[in-house]
Length: 156
Image (cartoon, rainbow, N blue to C red; front, side, top):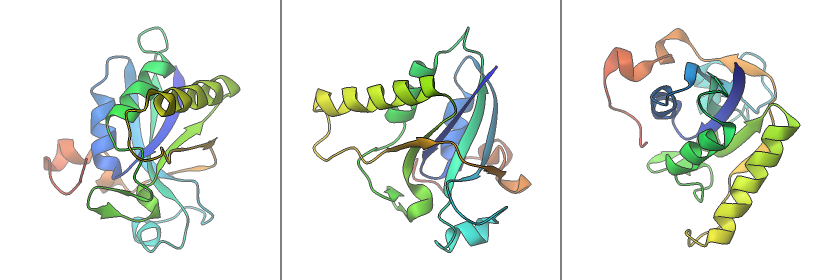
């Protein structure tokens, strides 16, 4: 199994979409990219920690490639919205790819360049591509949220 980490807005919807892909064997929502150790949801929402709501997933590279995950990531949100997705506003909703290997970094940068060259967006793509920093799992009530509570509450 391999690991990938993405931020694309409210992590509930992002987790649900990735979990539906064949080859994705496990998902977990959490916080990454900030400075506060082991943050709470309330702290992340205060905009003082610098963390993004993100999804870390395990996937089987024999069944789904990292490039296919990147395509799904870019298709599931608007990568031109800075620090927001739809009505969800704040730096925790930023678009980011947190790479775990040099190969993932190369693939992420290539996918972003290809989208920029394609000209399909009227605004610049603001997705950041950064090394995966420390991961902090979100509270239990956020895990598999839509499975537990149904679809509501997220823009995605």
